[in-house]
Image (cartoon, rainbow, N blue to C red; front, top):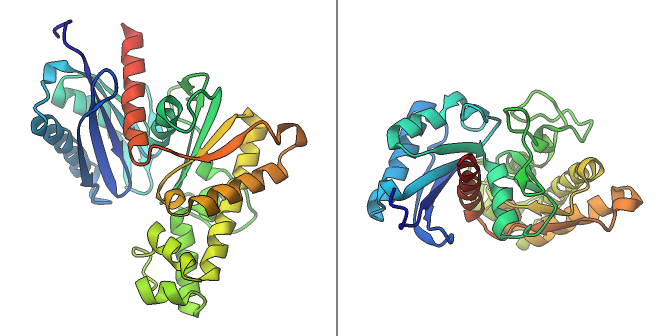
Length: 328
């Protein structure tokens, strides 16, 4: 690579419903972006090919010289084998033990760093957004599931060769409600958008949420974050209560995290939070501060993410750069 030319860094965020990739220059100016649908549970082989073709289109459409691409960070849902760059399990996509790093490196020829998508999101917020300057930042992103991540003193908190901070699969309730994981009463079972949507569909069917019933019916696929927010805005108190209860569950999860790590910043992100920021962030903050030990009450803040969909992509690219440059 020509030493006089600036490197280009790519970031990629693999979500449950969408995938987004962005190219950045050395100063993190956007060179180009490309978004596509994930196509749900389409199988890992087809999914990997869709990832590769999306990256190829980004490079071709923006005429990016491949010899200037220094690396790419790929944020993926679920636990990650960090040593081998493999997705170990993604309940919401149905992918198990998928070799992302090796296959993409072989395809493109530049370094690939694979990390958990919420780790990427909170790293993006730590470097450029709502958690900038924090000593310890926690990310909680409720969506189809509930993802968690942590940046501690400038590095993503990771286990021995495996990603960690699976906040969604920690138990905070004696409820028998389950999610994609067998343990009931977890944060994900109580507070994911999918769990809220399931309870909202019941409320609509019973006649307790007339606006939601009129607008989208009881189909879970249609009861998304915007529909829930719209129902609340138009007077469906039952839906507001459901969202508030979910936020209280996240608040209890925050209590546990504060008692363990004493973070100074908890960042809430994702479409659900974006659609109902005041209700969710306010409820989580109030619940957490009311229930933590008094010595911790004023030592943390709960805030909304600032970077939107770009958080995970930017964080993945920035983490890849940090990791790759540290090897030199």
